[in-house]
Length: 248
Length: 214
Image 1 (cartoon, each protein chain N blue to C red):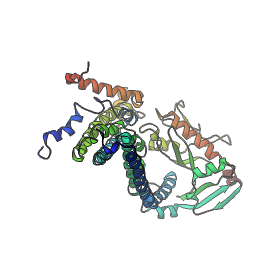
Image 2 (tube, chains in turn cyan, yellow):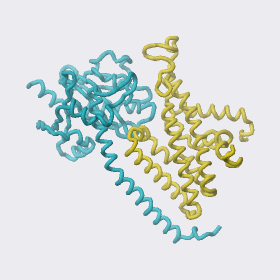
Image 3 (cartoon, rainbow over the protein chains, first blue to last red):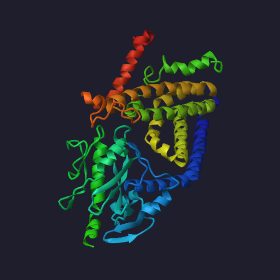
Image 4 (cartoon, chains in turn brown, orange):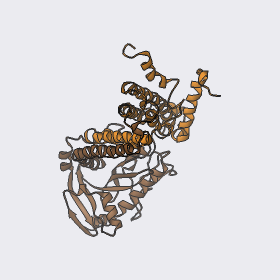
């Protein structure tokens, strides 16, 4: 079958034309939808932060956020202060929640001093300090928000992931895993120890809150190790700030 | 089926049984292993592939007379990748929650060999309507296996279905667990998906001997 579509010239022209059409199409969709997508991401950040401090609409088993249309008011009501910690300098910034943790991590690698956002929430007379964390899972990025009290005891946690295995690593965003962190200590004997996702802690109901360990998910060893690592390395950076809370 | 001629109807029904993409053609195995640890993920993947394969087959079929044969595989890949990315972007903008659920599948849809296989074997040689039916039929045949595998893996591996604890609570020892039943953690790992697919193939071929190759 020798057709005109077999000639080299046609092939090259077709390829060039296809690149132009597809490129234009994708560029159009990307730029047309970008504002809406960014807005969704911003709302999600607020929902995540509120979720970590226990402001959510959870039913018995599943994790449910404050609804999209209410979130701006709820966020303003519960989050009283947003701080940016840079070395020993602490400043207030009402847009601290928009700080991109990934970009900060990269710029810290290049030798810049990292800006650490910390959100202060008030609920039922209790003060929560919520920090964003970010690390690596098995396939891609994992991240989360951890709410702590002034003694660095976890009050709530929210985890999310980009592409962990469904049914295994992806379960870090399930209630049964996230709820295990509530009440868990990050400090041990006055120094920072973090929380390890453990397969051998012999405490599946997570009753021992001072062992710095949370029961692992079966089949999600590497994702679990990633969660341990990001909690340790990221929350450690906030220890000096929590120490200043005590002396004041 | 009054709507479809007998030949057209076979395009939909064949992949369900005697020409199933997974159990007979042994395509799409990689994603069948990767995402069937729970039923919900299987269903989401089945629906996504249904959409992509139906639409992709139509696009390729419409283009079939102008695609240069030397670069047809690349063209097919670009068409499916473009479709998937556009769907992903639209979902991110208008159904953000759903797009988060789908996030992990996007890459898997593009690399699914059933999609390239149907473009190459069917859409390049047939009209848009028949290609559309063929795409839907194959995606359904793929989806049904995915859902069967996901059902058994989630039930036996985690003791749940769609997240509901249908067998009782393994930690509180209620329901079946009160009698000493244990979840089989091995079901959650990829090898068991292959074994479950193998069992389906075995059952299918023992019921229809004509399918057995020498």
